Image (cartoon, rainbow, N blue to C red; front, top):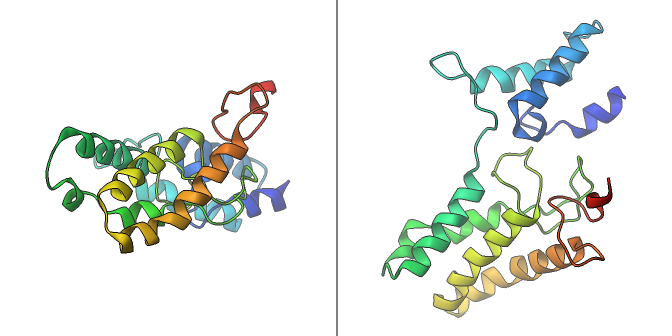
Length: 179
């Protein structure tokens, strides 16, 4: 079990970039006599880095990818002439997962809710990123389209392959609706 936890812990130290899950892993390993284990120490660094000035913690690190794609979609459809200056398609492209995800086994191509290393690609964030990139596609020049195209094709393929046989989409992994 410990080797699985070691493989699943992202570089940030936070499991799914979430304070509760990271705290549970930290408490569990500490309670069995492993408070000095590298997984615990990395998790503690993650937790302490997120503590707010008032002593509280957020549930998640942030939802940067999610809210950035929502803002891009809202600005692009609002008629705001210079919406592209407020949103970076390069930033959105850099949030795409390009490796098999260690936690869910998700194939490369999807986007998760944040740009931090523990984010998990999912259907809603991938859809939001693809919609945002579609606005850049429609308004961009040939160079912009060439930069966006590989990510869009990989993202569409990822999303289509996520779809369940009944036509619906699960959040993270195909077939999870049966679990």
